[in-house]
Image 1 (tube, rainbow, N blue to C red):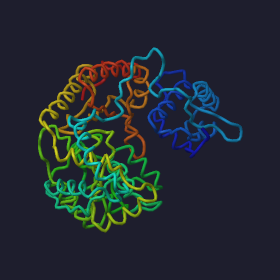
Image 2 (cartoon, helix red, strand yellow; image 1 turned 135 degrees about the vertical axis):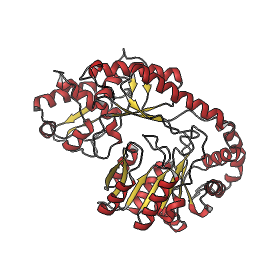
Image 3 (cartoon, rainbow, N blue to C red; image 1 turned 90 degrees about the vertical axis):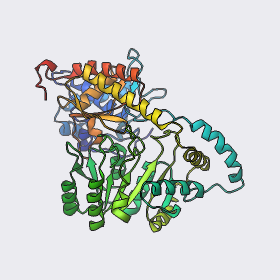
Image 4 (cartoon, rainbow, N blue to C red; image 1 turned 45 degrees about the horizontal axis):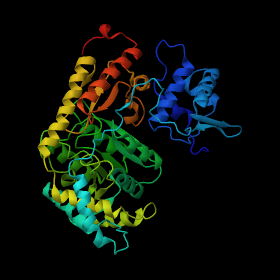
Length: 473
């Protein structure tokens, strides 16, 4: 594959993070492994043109010989291609599976994706939707804003949560991320600022950068949102847009309470700052609490809510939505035709059937997720007692503080032990977060226990300071 966009040496250095293992005399191998991790983690897409050896050596403060040796290793492995006059770029050899680190590595456990198998009832909804499809086959199939029946159901769900909504305020999309990208492209221009939480959802950060806008991070504190910090950032940077996850925040699991929503909503309305509120995890309340009303109930038209069933029902059902003022829905509908012509009719019918049927046993589903969460916390406390984390009341992951800044090194080492994890730096707007690691609990309990055992072995191999010598917080 020929090269596409170029990554600067400075940006690549941020992606690589703390790539060199402490005490290692194999710098080229460490650098090659870190670049490979960037490829496997999606930070370096196939076709990405790499900086020159000289530029990268300067950015990493290493010799050009070391960089050349690392690139030689990657070329031998088929992960980098080079051509005279065109430089080097990321490639992918035919038949290579990203998770196949080596033939003697145990079967990989995926701790990158926070997603569960399909919920009970999806297959039955598919069967019922087939009957509804007959009526649609006589039409052209381009739904624009979405099927009226599905928009009505989504609007009714918001109204039941304390946010009166009409079907005209709903636009059906191909998932919540697609919804965010549509709003981002509509409301921002290159050079604008977008306020985000720190940490936050990595793909949202990628979308913000792809739109040539700048993420402005506001750190989450020990107890969640620093609303004074948000207000200061809005006042000082005048962001064109904000991206917020107030229901079981990804990756921390925090949930903003009603009083916090009232304060944040008033700030957004007062400063006329539009905010995309991502409700991807809103239905994954593990304690059975209905929770506070949506942020839009406090922020009015300043809050644009996006939702999906990718976590609550199944990631393969690529349907999401936008809840916004009707005039904005009309503009977004017109603008989306530049990139897609609407969402699949059959999947919309399936989702309408799922909403009609409801969750057949929500308590049982919550119990399964709680047991997986508890199995993960028990395994971490047993195998990695110096890791710190807060047990969330919802969502699908733990946000763990590591005893030293080793997240990127740990991700590289974990791959050699058959565990795929995402380093903390992926959740940061400006790099860093090497003390942090997200671990989803969307796996069976025995598999999570196995993953933690492997992580403990990987952590022991990259520790700078022996665990016995570390102070306990």
